[in-house]
Length: 136
Image (cartoon, rainbow, N blue to C red; front, side, top):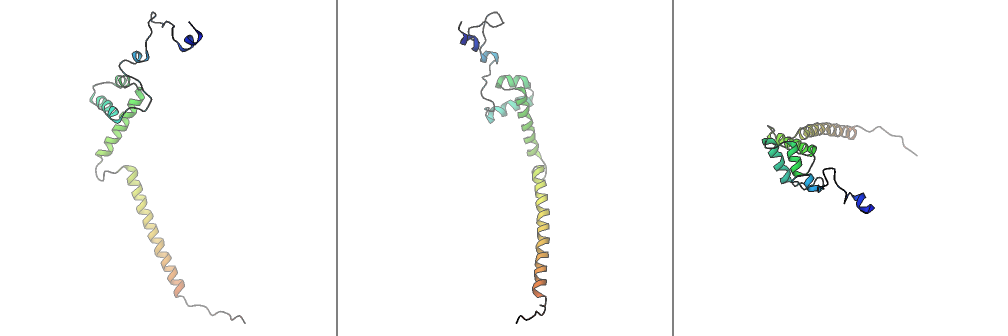
């Protein structure tokens, strides 16, 4: 066996009696792709199975070739989205409601300052001028 084969792990016997396992075999029926490369449809399917109790987090992670924490993240995102969709009233997020409240406050302050500015300008314009000195 060449040194290159030894470095790459090729040609060496595995600790399980000489039979080597490929990466696909090690993951079961999942074909692991690059992280973050699951389609929205795949993520939806995984979360629905998880919420329906048809499979555990570990089973879904193994089948989709991702880590369990990734599946838990998908579940958290889905539950957050469901919460937003079912929110009563305006259907707006807490952040949107906070920003709207802040906008109303700023509009009120702006209006108040604009009125003050107009009153000061009128007062300055309407005030009688002081007699000035003549420069001769």
